[in-house]
Length: 295
Image (cartoon, rainbow, N blue to C red; front, side, top):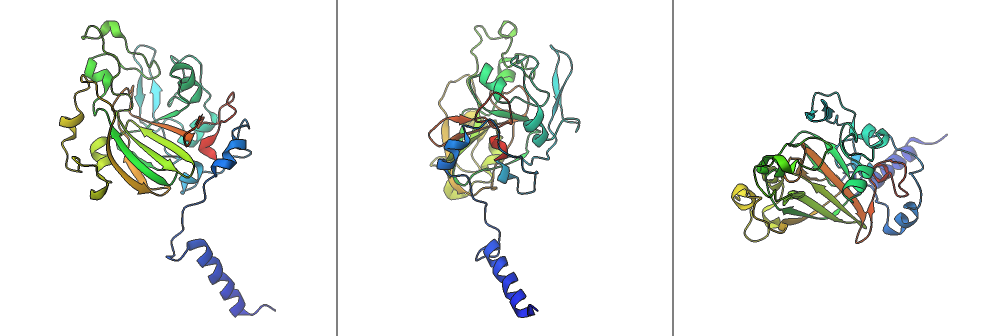
C-alpha cells in the first residue's frame, strides 16, 4: 500500500516542476535553430496539434479558433464580410489551399503560394476585424515600426478589392499613380529563440498603448500625435523604429489594423529562421518547409 504522505509529496513536486518558483506556468520551449534545420526538409509536420488556449504553442499570433472574415461578391465588387461565416484561423491555415491566380485565391486571406507567386513573400494573411489582439509567438525583443498610419488605396483614391493586390492605376486621381509607399505601415518584429517573426498592418495608437514608458525611443511616447507623424503617405520615408521591449511567448504585442498596402483589415504574419530563410506558415503542399504555424 502506498502511503498518503508519499502521494502528497509527489503531487507537490509535480506542481512545483510545472509552475516554477512563482506558481505560474512558464512559456513552453521553442524549437531550437538546430532542430529547425532538419525540420525544414520535410513537407509537413508529422502531426497537427489540437488548438488550445495557449495558442502560441502552435506559432499562431491569434487564437486559432478566431473566425476569419470571408470574401463575398463577384470580381469587380468584392469585399470582406465579418459575419462569422468564414473558417477559423486554424482551419484556414490547415485546409485552404490557394490558387496561383490572386484574383481567386482563398476566401479568408492570402497564404504562402499566393504571396510567393505574386509578391515573393512566404507569408500568411488573416482577415480579422481591426483591433484584434495580436500575440507574440516567440520570446525575445519586440520592435515597433511605422511608415504610415493610412491605407494606400484610400489615400490614392483607387478601388481596393480582396485578392487582386494590384490597384487600378488608370482610375487613380493622381497621375502618375505613386504606388504603395507604406507597405506594412505599422508592424512589430520579434527576434529571439532562433526566429524572427513579423506582424504587419497594425493599429499604431492602440499598439503603442501596450509599450511601457521606458520602451519608447527618444521623441515618442504613448501620447504622441501619430497622425501628424505618420499620416501623409505621399511623403516617402523609411520605416521608423518607435519602441523596443522584451517579450515572452504569448505576450500581447499589438492590435490589428488596416493601414498600408492593405486590401482589407487583416494581419500579415511571417516567420523565418533568425537571419535566414522565410518559412511557410501554412500547411500547404509544394513547400518543403510548410506548416510552421502548427509546430
